[in-house]
Amino acid sequence: MWLRVLELVASPARRRSGVLADLLSCRHPGNRREGAWRLSPQVSGYESVEMARYVELRRHTDADRDVLTQEGVRAATEIGARLDGGYDLLVSTGAQRATQTLACFLAALGERVPGGVVVEAGLRSEREERWRETYEKAGSGALEAMRAADPEFVEADSAALGAALGRVLDALPDGGRALVVGHSPTNEAAISGLTGEIVGPTSKGAGVLLVAADQGFRVESLD
Image (cartoon, rainbow, N blue to C red; front, side):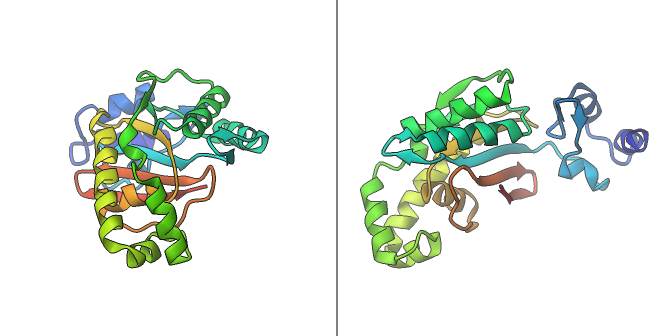
């Protein structure tokens, strides 16, 4: 099977510069984790290979105010042990609960991350109380319902959050992957502000995978 895949990638009709080398060196997003190879969605289709950038955007786990609870720590370490890895960069919003969740992910993952851990404060809204008020007004954490309740605020803050998410993408090399830990509904708002796509409310520890390629954006759910 692998010989067939490599032949297809290396053939003149399907070849992209550097992709074969990336596959062999495990730097392609279809990377190796604990000795098991997995193909990226781009390679497994056999139709084309694109050098995309990937942002795994997750919500922090259970917290009491700004500190993870014991359940939050337990859940974060369990999730971290299941992550695919291969990250170039880890990003927190700067909130302690987000940074602590990210630390638990990294402790369980047990990998070196070349870009280390950075803070993108723009992924944490400066108007968190307004989001709470909008949630109460909408009676729902769904972004569409909140936008209907306060359209001007939600549109403006989504645009600012989306710009911050775009800066994370800009920091990645072609084929690079970042793991970001943030909040709900501002994670969903950032996706909407950058891509125009609406995703449902994110449960604690869960998230979405944002793929940025030449053809545009794609958003996939993560457990």
